[in-house]
Image 1 (cartoon, helix red, strand yellow):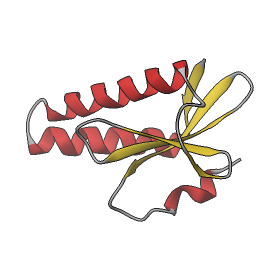
Image 2 (cartoon, one colour):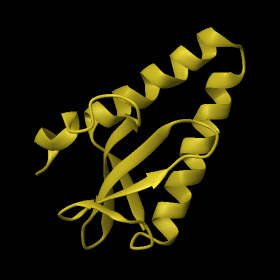
Image 3 (cartoon, rainbow, N blue to C red):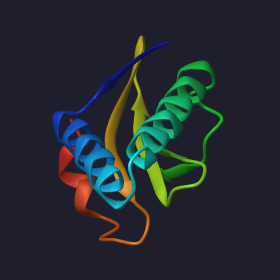
Length: 97
């Protein structure tokens, strides 16, 4: 299944990769790989993840305190947020269609 990122979710991903890369060289790449693995899992099994709110599901990353919040449409998955799990939990809700 095709996976698309909301523009703000894409910005969150880039900012997080940059932040981790500043903390330790290579760590940003590790984070990006974990997000990519989560995206692959979501694309393969979009309904396997728990429902967080309405039709929004959350897939957690390994090693990092992040979750990908997404909705499933007929032919694609839309990632609404690359969310740090210890920060404002509802900030993404205005990104719904």
